[in-house]
Image (cartoon, rainbow, N blue to C red):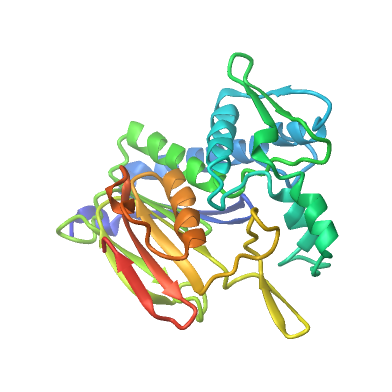
Length: 306
């Protein structure tokens, strides 16, 4: 433990639909908390689909009618989201029409008819997104299509905050975007500089862990089905919809937590492993992947690389 361990500065804020907590170690680094929050707000202004006006909403409003040009960072993130969506492993940035149909976790949650699900599935095809790199323009070819970057934006933003802090020589910090964690620098609380990161127990309150993992600076991202669900006629429907079927994913997993170098990679890989339902051969050999913790519905725990 070094002297920075006692120089802890924290700023809390509500943005991106969640509770944001930024922590830095070192009195000199405290000056970079508010500018980081301002960066988060700026990204939210451009990326949100929870307001009528944003760069992403401009694209959605123009669906079926024409392309819209966006800022470089927004285009970079959209291009990344569309690329992963086209891999068809479960992540889909066009799934918004289906989410709004089910409404799980929100007022009016219901079990749609099979016909309604089929109709909405037609609006979630990532091949129907046209990208123009020269103009930074995005066109959703069918009216009714919606782009939603919520499944990848927090990771991308966390990485940008880390870049900002490192550029200003912040020695150590924690970026917590609603449970998506990114650890920066060496932990001042341990002589080996590693961080202790808790893995949420799906059956207990947030913050109560089933396991604690020790890692150098990294991201920790969880995909799970334990927080939002609908019970109808004795059947439990969770919120994680499978874009290949239009229905909640059939799985015996409760959550998957991945540890990666980049937070945006963690967003994607947590979903890749969750939709796989099991460890993927060669996953640990891929650049940036550190390890994962699988928690099954019967509370058995399976670790890879940890």
